[in-house]
Length: 142
Image (cartoon, rainbow, N blue to C red; front, side, top):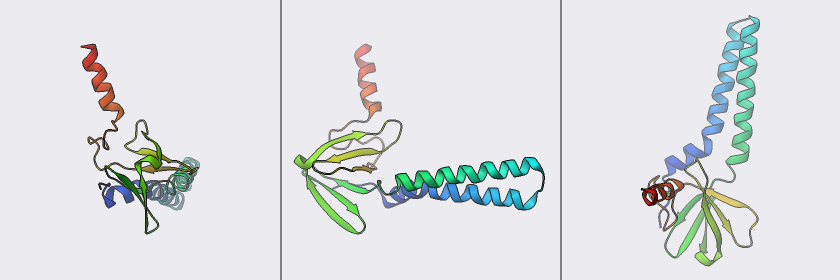
């Protein structure tokens, strides 16, 4: 079974949290160092960007899971537990446009699972990226 590296997974999972905290630190430093009205407006901008990034983290992080894809089954690794599913239990897997993430829907489950593939160029056992589909269409046109 193949899954994305832990570094790639944790970077994607906590990127918005780290970026939001960085925005808050920048806003705090601007507010602390200057008293001009423009700097207060800039600090407010950084604080609000930090809040947006924190909200994105709260929305995205719980849905992003580690998934190992094999030829016969899929393993979802979440909260230290591994749950195995056979391919007939998978309703669909789709790539998310513009992002290197796949969306997985299991039969009988409401929530969708988002996961990272092992490599950007490597399709997941017959599932192609939108870029490779576009490349095939360009070849047909020529």
